[in-house]
Length: 238
Image 1 (tube, rainbow, N blue to C red):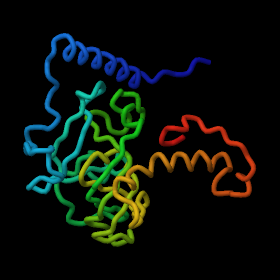
Image 2: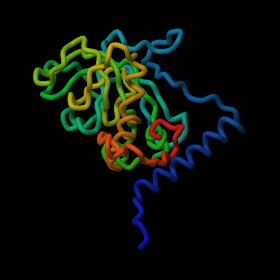
Image 3: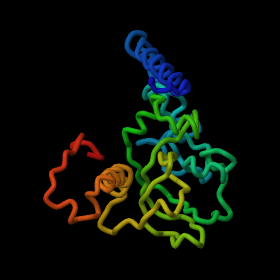
Image 4: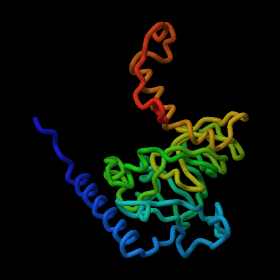
């Protein structure tokens, strides 16, 4: 039987191809400069925008639609961001407009110091990532991995302000302040930098999950003496 085709995904794929061709034409043939990465609302400082604005808002990177790098924008129109699993807590949006007076149960507010770029993020920009299209749409703040310092936390989480943490957000990590579930965080060891912490969750977690499904982890006796074929060994998950 022929596999079913998701028309929404196909539409975004075609739009991404058209957008990339149009951008190539503008940059290569017409030689128009790309649009500014920083929005007018961000301060023009040497080295880019500050991590937080004077009004307390975070700085985040969003993808405004399918296509090339021209679709990326840095903006500061919200206090924090979150993943799609928490959007129901915040009026159906990734963008939390104002500071939280009380952190909802199970949630933690992280001042994000580092995030990673995964291949999945590129697929989102291409319009190929189905859950991004289904649960968020455009524009979207992408990203899974975070590492930073707890600013606020619900009493039931076991975290407190000042804790160094790393973990995940289901999109929304391209941001200097992220609200995520405590279940998706861990304390960051003192001997790891924020950059190292942000490089671990998605790639290492996927690799360990694959090893677990194959019975190779954490069951050491099963793994001993076996040969294992590792695809894409040079990649993050391989």
